[in-house]
Length: 87
Image (cartoon, rainbow, N blue to C red):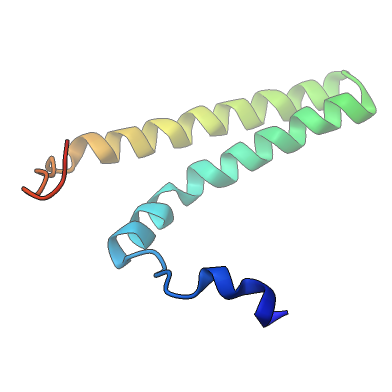
């Protein structure tokens, strides 16, 4: 199997800063997955009071998590681009 992955040789993984950004966005990612699960449940089970509450709860949590992530981004100082990078 490792021979099949030769095209990955020389690639680097995410930086610590990128991992920190992903970690900061995990509540939003988890909320998106919960919302998707609720949508799939509606498609498979049907729309009833229980699934309606699932969707509402998931939507509310998704919006809350998105607001938290956006507020955290807005509070961070803006990064300046380095001279070797095009903005």
